[in-house]
Figure 1 (tube, rainbow, N blue to C red):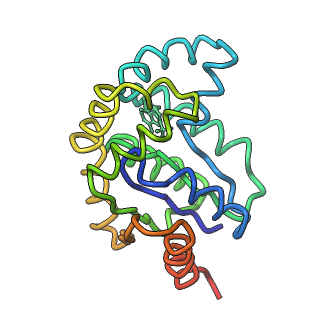
Figure 2: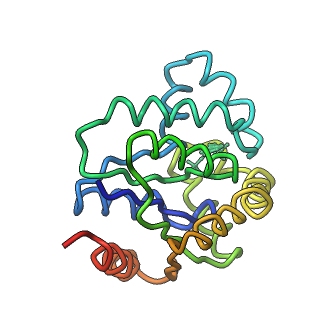
Length: 193
Ligand code: AMP
């Protein structure tokens, strides 16, 4: 299996690029944001609990998302690899992911981070709010809280993968296709021959 993390702040294009990457490489897409929104629309107890944090732009507690990823890994055994999108978002989640994959004799092959400036992020998220139906994209204060959570808790996760020599940085501004080509090149370099 070949497992990658698509990393970057909210609005950096992880969702858009993930869709294109899974179509090209057949990875199983695991987006914790999508999984949480599905729990919310089904009004499950987990969804109702998570919504309280998401509405404010705060991260959902680690044990909730780690549990969700653990069951997703268990229920997708025959896949070419996983594309993690929006996970891990804290150091504790990164450690938990290492352990879960190790139990399956698997590892992360690369963490690819999308670099985008803060003003561009806010602009994109507000624009997305006009059509996405996501309440956390509409309010500028919630958007700023999400970016703040990213700087405080998520950005340090990159160091975890830098130390393991698995971190790759790609410019996340430009056309969707240019960014997609840059991501594809990084993946192709690392895929087993
Ligand atoms: P996203 O769709 O990735 O932008 O995530 C939307 C919201 O879901 C975030 O602002 C968090 O509240 C929550 N969320 C998604 N993934 C995680 C995660 N790995 N850890 C904690 N909260 C998360």
